[in-house]
Image (cartoon, rainbow over all chains, first blue to last red; front, side, top):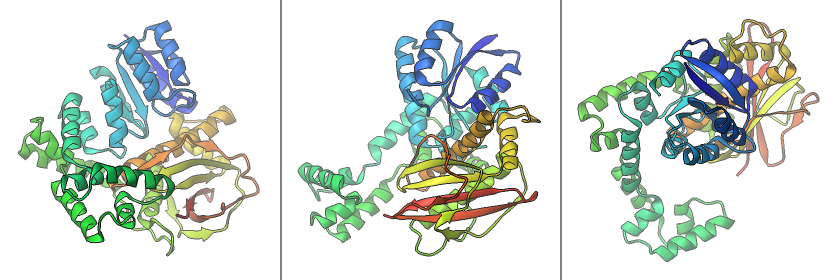
Length: 119
Length: 289
């Protein structure tokens, strides 16, 4: 089983994603954060197998957190979660910074799980 | 189930790797010259002229070409020549993928057809925007995508009403808003009744009932719906050659007595008639430029 960390400032989104992930036997959500700074702290604390990181968050946005995470843990599989996945520049920036993939909103359960299985 | 760009679609399908996409994007960036780079390439200006134009753009909101004409550095005719050259030499992402060897020319046609089918649900339908409102096609697209997401995400039946220009939004119990900047400057406001908020929350939380949920979670669901719609609007705008940045969604706490359209803005209201008679209204405060 792979341990997943969800970081999103929206409780509604975290709940929806948690439900999708925990419904599958291969994955388990082990912790949740609300901003990029918490993402870094929780990654060091829990050593998750996968991180689902929102792009647009207060305090520290997802791309800034991704940049730090890739320096601290270059092999950590991070997928960005965003409604801006269809904006080419944002998608490219995330991939260039080291994100393994981008989950676009609204979520499609099977696409999310397929993406996580590919990591 | 979202507006995508072709490269993302190809990675999601497993047709290319993300590394191949990055190679293709690098090639595109080297090939597709910006206006300023193209005028240098065509020998119409020097680097010092470009720097002067950029400096002038800080104090006046004009496109590069328009500013260059205003400063007498090039003529209108030369602007058209530059734009034509940019258009003719533009390398699309699909062609770039072929050039870097990620896919074959033959398979590109098939993938483009698949992409067109995937995105067909997001092609804008004609919505009448009152005359004299700037950037009409953008507001048509904004309203159209809001309706499409209402169907796809929330799954309720409705009939859109005609767009009208307003001076003040009527008082509504729940209003979530988001700011647009970039190619256009505007506020996107979504008004819902408590009953409609619950429908949105059920869809966002993927729950059969939200009776025991806190107001914070219910409001958060409406904000998330606005976030999804506006993110997809930004993606669609990018496909149409515009750049829209969005701010995080917020709830308006001054919504009960109505909200006056701010000065130097035009208020556009798009009522949506739901089958149960409940409220769902889109309002856009468009900044005059």
